[in-house]
Length: 200
Image 1 (cartoon, rainbow, N blue to C red):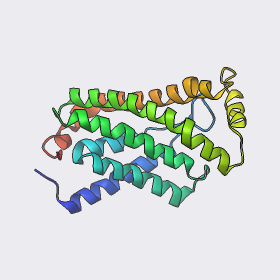
Image 2: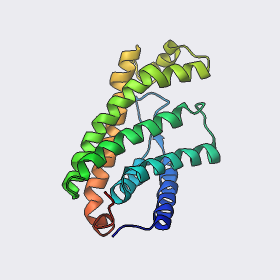
Image 3: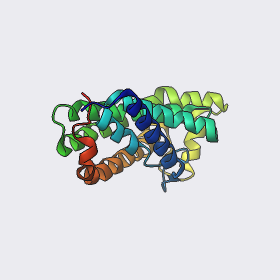
């Protein structure tokens, strides 16, 4: 049974608000770059994707970032919100591609595992070639100073490649992995919502 447009809009709004609230509960991870904060805001995005499809998941991720900018502002000249959105989309799309073939918990978990890897690669490449240079330009900071900020909490981060390999990559693997674990353990309880209501 397909959801009516009004129902989908309401559900997207609710899940977007939930994602925003979860993002507010962020906290730093020891030895990780100080500009990275851990949260579980991807969970409502993935739930929305499994229920309504990838467009809904993307809209939930976008709504989350728009609420963040509108209600609490951006402390990163929008670079943080942009990379969060890019990573969310990179996680959502592979998850849906695998899940849609055989809609069950196993497929969802396999999809999220693939999404975790894809999103981590995209996060690393985006930061190297786009986000970190843009962040540095916005705050008039050379890349070497951004690396030094990270080295202050982890002495092994002494170059841009190390910032990516032992900072950005493991952080994204951890966040995506926790999202996968939480949803993998709880999807059966959400079966009534994720069954016939899923849109192809």
